[in-house]
Length: 203
Image (cartoon, rainbow, N blue to C red; front, side, top):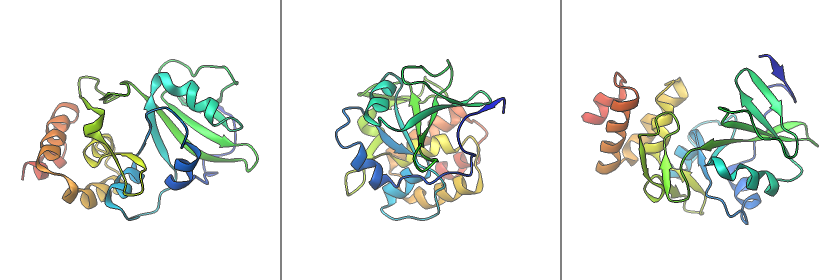
């Protein structure tokens, strides 16, 4: 790292999705929980420990969520830096990850991912040729929390396939309907053509 503003990476005390939903209840921005929590929200149960909480929003809506979470400090995380943003400072070009610091507790509460797309269309950040209607990719938990549905969440997780990503694939596989399975299989064939998950999706 060339620059690190704020507490160390171990200083995560993330909000739960339910805590966050209360804080964002009046925010007029299309947001959804992503990552491992998205899988567990789709399942309706917690299947593993989550070190952080990640959400995604359209890139143009970052100023709105920053205003809404006034009092918390956004940091651009990427390109070898965790860079504290001034109140009106824009993140560097190419940085999509933003850690949210609770300055009173001195802990990280949330990771806000900015992505292409808009309120109607979801676009895969790593390959913008992969897209879908937002309504087909974003669902809601029984208690109303928006989350990336498993076929979208697993597409992101395929890049690293860490043990927790394989766990998430295994527990979410049964949630995939035929259309979602075909969509994920085709998206993986484009983004990660040699991925091991393709054979299982074919089967």
